[in-house]
Length: 212
Image 1 (cartoon, rainbow, N blue to C red):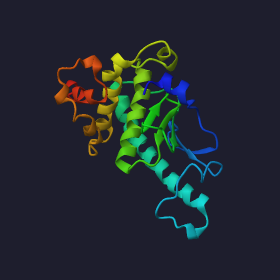
Image 2: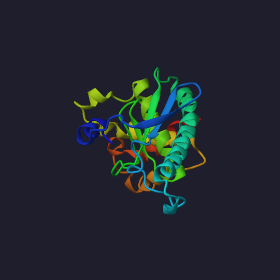
Image 3: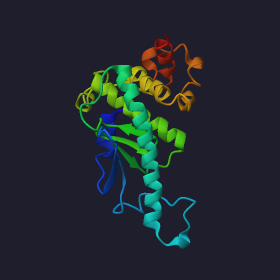
Image 4: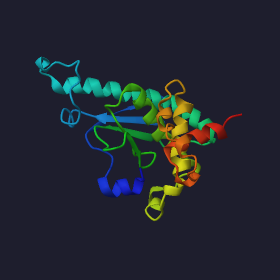
């Protein structure tokens, strides 16, 4: 997703009424809807009966669990990305769990404004969280333009590096999941296309580039 366009079109900002978990070293914060937001933001899970009568607490239990899963993914990915790119953010990184991002599972508007849909299956939740975190590391490493710079540029020609790199990074963080393989099905049928016309499926190229 082009971050500047997303910001202008959707007005994505830090949500209010959220609570958060913080990693032990203070480098990561994962925000989830608190009692002020729930229950409207979070649908009931099948495990919660309407007869219980306490919708808010039921939903809080669900979304807190999802937030802990995201934290686990980010704590796994963070040191791997820091070693891979030989850099790391100087400030705390923040990820927000939200209900709906339209056609996207995740979104990155900077290291302090990362989003992931909380209703994703566990493997996609982990992979998407790691994917968006890698965009943060790309920004810190100078690979990705800043949000302000993207307002005046077209990032399409860079997607093979930005989205392809982040797709490959899903494998770096969670090699056991292989969610990134879903993006590779249309790679070989389109081998005649330019590298600069590729996006997520160019993660396959990164596998080759990083082989020792």
